[in-house]
Amino acid sequence: MNLFETYSARLHAALSALAERGAIPAGLDLGRVVVEPTKDPAHGDLASNAAMVLAKEAGTNPRALAGLLVEELSKDPEVVRAEIAGPGFINLTLQPAVFTAVLKAAIAAGTDYGRGTPKPAPRINVEYVSANPTGPMHVGHGRGAVFGDALASLLAFAGHDVTREYYINDAGAQVDVLARSAFLRYREALGEEIGAIPEGLYPGDYLKAVGKTLAEQYGPALREKAEWDWLPLVRQAAIDGMMAMIRDDLAALGVVHDVFFSERSLQGRDGNSNAVHQTIEDLRARDLVYEGRLPPPKGQKDEDWEDREQTLFRATRFGDDVDRPLLKSDGSYTYFANDIAYHRSKFVRGFPEMIDVWGADHGGYVKRMQAAVKAVTNGQGSLDVKLCQLVRLLRNGEQVRMSKRSGDFVTLREVIDEVGRDAVRFMMIFRKNDATLDFDLAKVVEQSKDNPVFYVQYAHARCASIFRQAREAFPDLDLSPAALAEADLAILTDEAEIGIVKSIAAYPRIIEAAAAAHEPHRVAFFVHELASAFHSLWNKGKDSPQLRFVNQTDRKSTLARLAFVHAVRGVLASGLAVAGVAAPEEMR
Image (cartoon, rainbow, N blue to C red; front, side, top):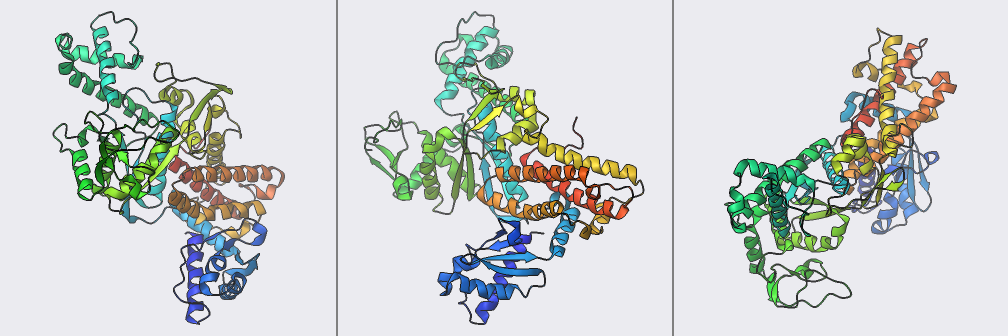
């Protein structure tokens, strides 16, 4: 039951009734009309901007239109009061029975409360992590992994058909550097003294396992070959080894992708057709690729700029600042050319809606990729890029230094092993993705209200403990959802209880809005606020015995409050599931 969706429909019906009477024109654009909670509970339960956004189109002023709507909405038996606020906002106060019905719906649905109806189209592709397979993941990768995974879960819960994808960057120069680094470890595994790792190669110990595998598979045979003979073999072994490690790290974080897409497969390698060449020629046939020169960039260094005639994509036709190169001076494809072909493949595979999760350092790449998606899909596809800002890893407020190039860094797996999956996942989305995140290894394991993940999980565990107490006090009490839904919920009249019920009523709207905005942090914020309100009510019961959840002398009030707690527990568990975090029955 989505209360806001219900009253949006009733508001639309009121507008239609006014149009039928000739009070306003028919066919008004309702796209900007919203129904939302009032900012101040004293002003009612629901608020709408309908009169404000429709008045001009309706040929009247906002307060006049609001007056017509208030008159129409006042006819609804569930509306206690409809009022005009300020320049023309509409506030509605609802009958308590409306929220009783919401609570019953939440009790009956359990963790499915707030789930959206299945939406057959469009299918959505969420691509995230896509870390170069050149070493273990660090906490920065972890933020993108958690954000992308939580976003995919949120979209799926809202009813969308979602595919989780990882793009393996296995065609660039970095994988040849990886192969040469692994070859050194192979020689080391054969007993050779390799000395210090040369500058420019990957020095991490994580490649020792790849070297050992190569030594076991090939013996000394590779050492006798020329580089052009051993490089493809070692490169593939190194990529396979790194991807196995990355998948294992992701699994420890609870992240599982549906698709791992190889960049090499786009370039006509390994028996595949050359999708990059085909994409460029398709764009050329539509006069979107030409031979020309680029002006030097103004005031900043651009690694893609070369003062020569080259093959360019007309990115400026689609909103980019300059046209973009597709071929390097040696005739190989630019990263951008590969990325255009990759996103074209997403569209061809049935994903008109694409979401990419990138690191903050790729911000300058967004406009060109959005231009490319418009071009290769003829405007039928869309790309939303979510940038994840940096993670500062701290321990008791002191920054922990990392350097992937030197091999001296804290891996994501080490962080997971130290503080646990739940702490990593919740904290990674307990801040908006485009804001820098301070992740303190000491703070996230504290059992205190200052630790958000503990605070939310503890609220769920408290709900479970209340049911254990109730079973001890009333062994014969039927605590099934069906029985709880039949409780006399009118007993719940305390201001704190009513506030929580109204929060529960808002949950489906939170899910819908967070999914539409691609912002899973909204769900984390919501469950934290709900947990805080529930803890406050728990503490209030210490001083007010009539508010205690289990009253051994009053079965009726106990059943009503258990129904209330069951609904709270379901919403907490649902929100935690979207975040990929466990909802424990006990906290030790």
